[in-house]
Image 1 (tube, rainbow over the protein chains, first blue to last red):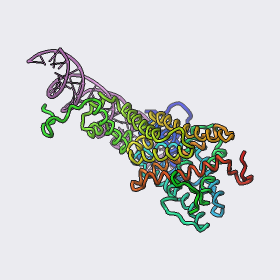
Image 2 (image 1 turned 60 degrees about the horizontal axis):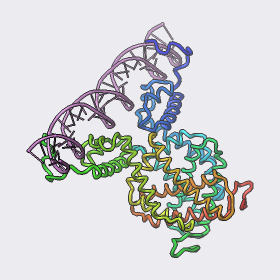
Image 3 (image 1 turned 180 degrees about the horizontal axis):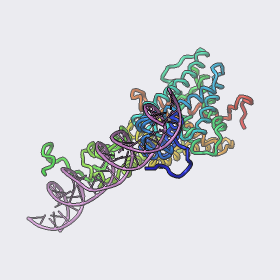
Image 4 (image 1 turned 135 degrees about the horizontal axis):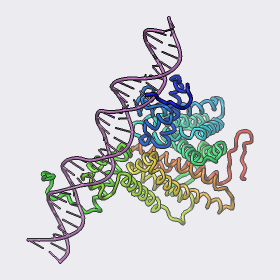
Length: 222
Length: 222
DNA sequence: GAGCATACCTACTCGTGCGTAGGGTTACGC
DNA sequence: GCGTAACCCTACGCACGAGTAGGTATGCTC
């Protein structure tokens, strides 16, 4: 049925590995714009310059395709952060490098961020995947806080640390979201501002400053 | 075709206002569990103890129904916070009351929270609704920070304040999320911990403490 | 240059779920 | 007690989109 008569003569027929990446690129793009359900396999295939059965042949069902996107983007993100920090740095330097890397990554991969954090969260089948990624990050932060505390000989309960870590991670995610919607903003500068909130606050907390409910407020180390 | 033979004799045929609330309750519940697309109008109708055309007659299409849920839950949330704060309180007391009210509300209305923040975010048609609500909260927080700063005669740019406000709001949302997944946790105590992160950090920032990137770090008021 | 695997297509099937047509029944005013 | 309006139902139409059947072309190996 003479397909694709016009256009360049020998263009198609790329090796599998290349096509898979093109498909993933297209999928991330379409998923991020339309959401998981809003995206159609036809549109993704179209955007990748390929037809639908190819997508099914290479990446499987829609659900599997989305998981593949999640994995690629998640891995890239974690890798970007891991590459930026060295274990021998001080606590605040590690936090700073992480923030830099993280916000830098988000600024450069807005679609990936949208897929991971704006779409995956609401969709039942994938909430678990995302929660796992998030938990790893929270535990990383909590571990960092705990390490600093222990090295100063202070004790804390796990729950308290977890809540603080959740707050820190949530704050950063929120700022990342803001960054995505403000293309004119500089990730580096945004990271500095975030560092101010996180570190100045955390440093005080680590130093023992506490806020207490109105009736018996005060500043007590323990 | 003799409908509903068994069960109580005179039970059905409730006034519109009552049925609408039942439908909204069911909708919020189902949407929060299954997500917007995963939820079916049939299931919602079923859960409300009514048949589908009634839902369409009273609340309109699925999209309109979801918006109605968003509005009711959003309004309830904002109201809960508004009821808790008085304008003549000090900045930290206002923040404290807000956090208490907010986390208390989330703890008591987990389904509503899930609909608002876990589902609405990813769905394209409603992202705007949610963003608007969020922006109102952010502006509230930013306004509070600015007011405190101005009363001490200090200047700041709008963008900086916005980022800090986003961080604070994001941190709180994240902690709320944690709270939803930890039914055993006490909202009041969680609010205290959140207050520690937010206020101890913010207080330092407001007082002029700054963190600076490694090469030229230091503490400078301006 | 025959054989084979890989890349790629068009054109379908079929389930699912939104939204509606068309009709029945109870309450309430008069 | 009769009309009318509000409440409520059982069906269905229909579009959309996931996934597939079945076939074609191209390059690579020997």
